[in-house]
Length: 175
Image 1 (cartoon, rainbow, N blue to C red):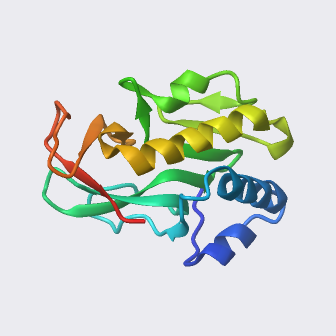
Image 2 (cartoon, helix red, strand yellow):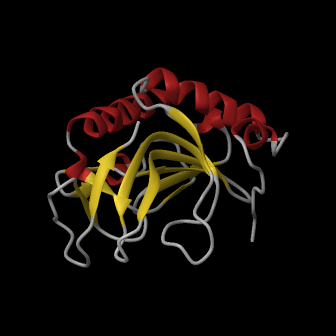
């Protein structure tokens, strides 16, 4: 399994020198397209705690309450180095559907999942649509956290709302 075993944002950006340029271009692009999503280093969650373990660059920090009652930090947008790709994860929905699905096949990506897309080189991306996507994420993040969706299952509700059929959980904006 490919792991980026670093402890801070700068080391993450420097981890793969062959893809550093693509990662930096994407980082600058996200910060310009969605300036209200504060960038941070997402450390992942420790073993035996709820949440995803891998490290990534986060933009806009959310916090949700997991099924066991623990609070878990998660980014509205997460950028992660994979073995062969750079992946972008979105914790945002629109009209009950994953926001990424509305842009699927249009971003120049190599692969698309339910809540993420992956690419090999920044130059392959359709930046005009990508700017719209990140601006839309920022708008939803700032306006209504009931439209946040986490990688491991379903819609997560904002503060006192609950719309998840598999487990009651709550979400709030951290930064």
